[in-house]
Image 1 (cartoon, rainbow, N blue to C red):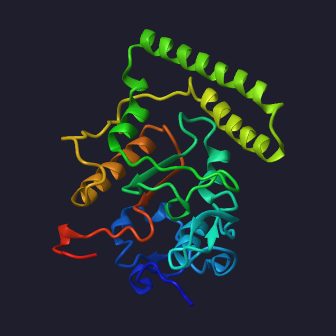
Image 2: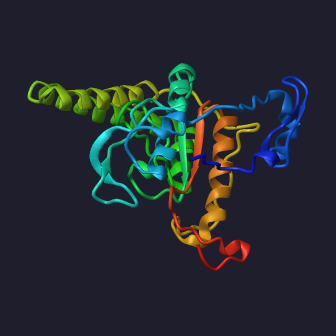
Image 3: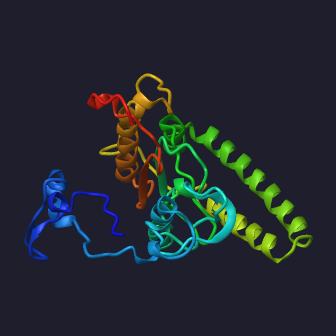
Length: 275
């Protein structure tokens, strides 16, 4: 079975590798054509193998190209008796973040638009096997994460960083006492957690400056993040925040996930009344 997620005739560029015209779908990116690398002919052969239903395989392998883990965590959509685990490999965005994200406040940024759930059908980014990276669905929480430190009073910011370091130090002490008491699999999970804590510590003093193209967008009135009709507005805020994070050099690797598989969104803003 062949799965398609776009109208290829309207997406595919025409011409040669260095001289090409963008299709209807990519046409808005024409002003940046000399900076684009459009990849075609990449298969998802891995999604035809291993455990999981079609939806789980599609999203769980979209950026990893690796079969899902065997497991008992998540039931298949059409067969609740069959179950599967998380993705089984590092995703390409996290691979890039490990190479490109050492000089920025955030090694990568994962944004969501009403992703909402925490299961294999709602994760595309993975630090490694069984290590999903949750996207941030709330534009206001994301705004605080990105910009609060940049506009804070220097003394208040120094106090906040010192407090964070004390919290991290306490976490490391707890890790040391717990690591000697657990078995191999649990110890491996703890080590992955420790790696994440170390990444946080390295970025407490990462640079970041407001000004120029780095101007935080206005969030406007508070929205119900998960209301069906908020979908377009939340999407607009998230894409604006993503673009600003790149302009501010707060990160150089980012992804945005629009909902999850089998989300059942009703496109009321396009005049639809049913999913």
